[in-house]
Image 1 (spheres, chains in turn orange, green, cyan, purple):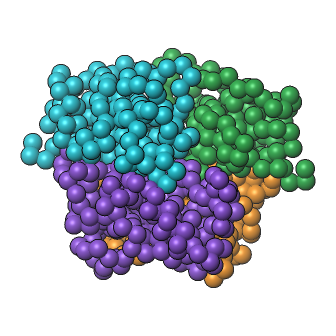
Image 2: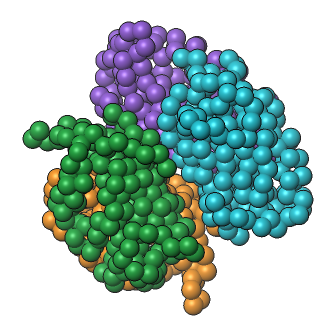
Image 3: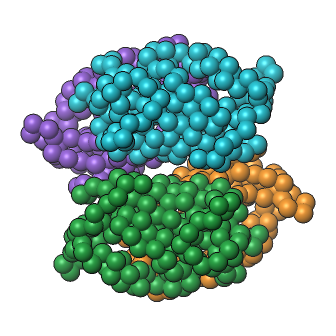
Amino acid sequence: MADFTPQNPHFERAVRESFARQAFMTTLGARLVRVQPGDVRIAMPHAAAFTQQNGFLHAGAVSTIADSACGYAAYSLCPPGYDVLAVEFKINLLSPASGPWLLACGQVLRPGRTLTTCFCDVWGIDTETDEVAAGARRVATMLSTIITQPAAGS
Amino acid sequence: MADFTPQNPHFERAVRESFARQAFMTTLGARLVRVQPGDVRIAMPHAAAFTQQNGFLHAGAVSTIADSACGYAAYSLCPPGYDVLAVEFKINLLSPASGPWLLACGQVLRPGRTLTTCFCDVWGIDTETDEVAAGARRVATMLSTIITQPAAGS
Amino acid sequence: MADFTPQNPHFERAVRESFARQAFMTTLGARLVRVQPGDVRIAMPHAAAFTQQNGFLHAGAVSTIADSACGYAAYSLCPPGYDVLAVEFKINLLSPASGPWLLACGQVLRPGRTLTTCFCDVWGIDTETDEVAAGARRVATMLSTIITQPAAGS
Amino acid sequence: MADFTPQNPHFERAVRESFARQAFMTTLGARLVRVQPGDVRIAMPHAAAFTQQNGFLHAGAVSTIADSACGYAAYSLCPPGYDVLAVEFKINLLSPASGPWLLACGQVLRPGRTLTTCFCDVWGIDTETDEVAAGARRVATMLSTIITQPAAGS
């Protein structure tokens, strides 16, 4: 991947503070396991409360952490005083979201002043970690468009 | 919309039973407000537990009910003994998911033996209902591909 | 569909002039058969030069006229001095693109100052027309995001 | 990328023969510059006949070669007697399709008996080649779902 230079020297704090305000992340038990410029990873343990009819995590739960991973990957490259919003995303569900944990790896593909394109692979993993082990199963892949706007109240 | 003839005379019961097994729907407080052939609607009240950093419902929550509405719209046209699985979807987030309730209106666009294409508009609404009032705000629109497979254990 | 009020009183001329500059439209034999605010239709005859391996029109040809129909639907609502650019699109190919003509019906779903969301159904039709006859076969459906920018040279 | 084992020992001949029957590839001047298992690349020179209103290659032309590159990447892994068809794709247009040539790099992400997921990056390049030089500009990225079916006449 390309190396990105953050415009906000406090990008990690900005990402962590915003993440902490996403109540849905807390509800899902999701954790921010990596915050680097243009590269944000979120891990989430399996939990029965978020399953579909066959006991796997619902595609919507997979999408939720992938969407946040993309959004925060984009946000990590924002200037101070700006916020991000997902314009749209597309996700392919590649295999059942089983396994003790999921790891959503959000990456900026092309940053832009207004629009940033991100992608995210989601993997089934065994423990809480920010690394994808060799042989891990890819659960989903997302392609996402994110808009950068002056933050409300800024 | 086209009128669809269900292949399972008990399609409504099949949809309601599967929905009841989606623990994530219960967790979100989502309700099945319409089950017709190829036309399934899910309503969900606003709740702080599923919000993003600005207090709106997270795009992932919007996607979750839209994905289920599409899946059950497809499932309503399945023969007995078959199950559905989302292959992929794409969602455009059109306006903030505010408002007391969201209504996800899943529709079959083109049914198929193997693959069914669905779309779903999600609306901000004032009360629990299956109708979109004139002047309602469209929150999101989804296009989705669903695969039909013999049910596990069938 | 919603009724849209164009910001450019000469929107039709603007659309027709831009369309005439899209050399690819001429190459494909594509014709602008309807230009209304937020509602643009493009018809294209079947031609062997644009087929895939089985003699149907290539999905790329279908995508090309759908992309232009969406783009011009958005452009019809632009202020003077602005141009549009597709940010991304997603297309589902629903049935083989056979038939003497294709008709791509681009519609604005939600206009915006910066981003406009459009959709487009593509139909197999028998003659050059801007109307979809009852019983026509839907060949594809597209969902598209378009950005509005000051025109180069404006 | 993963290494894939082709099921058809004559996969390269199969891909080349099918490509030769895609009249649209000939029309566009597109060339098959790499055929490996799950990894197919198509190069296309800039030509005025396929441009949009500003003189860049039309997004539809970019989509066409990306769609074919994905389809043939999937096809290279098919058993003999089967054919592939695009179910849907999504493309993000990242920068203007300028430059003397475009190179569409189709890759299988997850092969399957019925459905195969592919992605494709399209790059602006200087000459006809199957290699992406360091510093090349990414023009677009595609995520695509492809279905494998018994070939007509097989």
